Length: 124
Image (cartoon, rainbow, N blue to C red; front, side):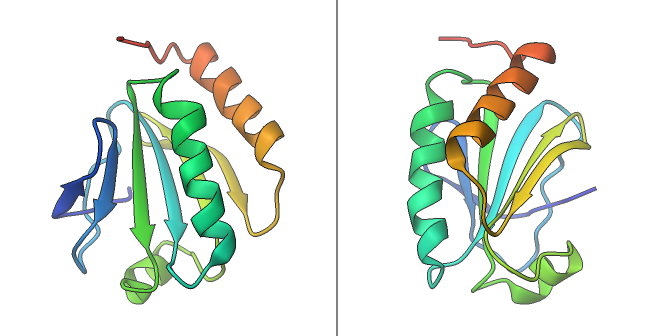
């Protein structure tokens, strides 16, 4: 189970890790976790696009960004050695993972389909 501690809320559904220990529990609900870094240009482009595409439609989907530039050891403990890595969890189980080079449109479509299938409710 992936965990993160000392989160800093950025928006209603988004958190950015602000501490060396990654200890948030993913065992309940829907979570999209992106492992990125400031030096990763692709990460800097993908993350805002994911927020725009998913935040409004799936308000119950919690969006987490982990900066591997600041937390290299913790990212390595989760098997993240190249960036970006984006993982979708439902109730603690990994359902979808994309890494390095991937098309954002089909990935967002896959996330939307899984959220519909697993009844992530839009509470807006």
